[in-house]
Amino acid sequence: MALELMWAAHWNELKSMSDKDIMEGVDLPKFGTDRIQLMASVKAEAGRRRLAAAKAEMDSGRPVLGGVNPAISAAEARAFLREAANDPRVTMAARALEDMSDDLVLRTYTRMKSLLEPDSDAGGA
Image 1 (spheres, one colour):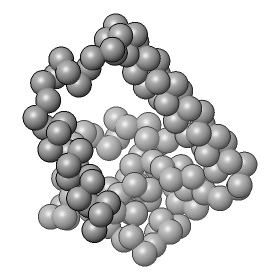
Image 2 (spheres, one colour):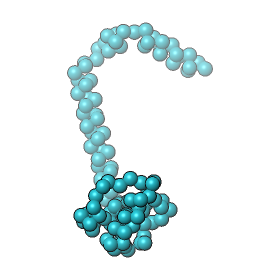
Image 3 (tube, helix red, strand yellow):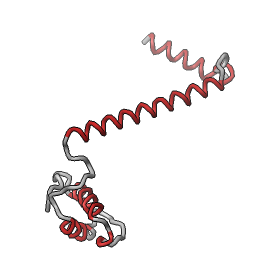
Image 4 (tube, rainbow, N blue to C red):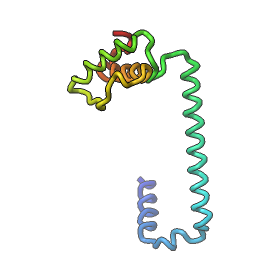
């Protein structure tokens, strides 16, 4: 309770102060530069962590999300996508399946299969 009263008193004091009073003694250009540098270092660290996680995922030997499933042929994947285009749960861009590369057809099949059948491992027809 005492901590809440102290916090409320500080909060009320801050609310009643002007911006100039609050920022008194703060070097604004340096403050801004410090924050920009902090954000840059946070973004760089997040990038390093994402890269490390991606490398670990690749090294784990587990199937990678969006990877091509070799258990199904491109022709079978095209047939599945042709049928899936009529499914009201999904919307596909108007593209001719015959104009798509086999790799793109297989990647699209894998994604579509995981959307339509989330319990499935997208493993074959």
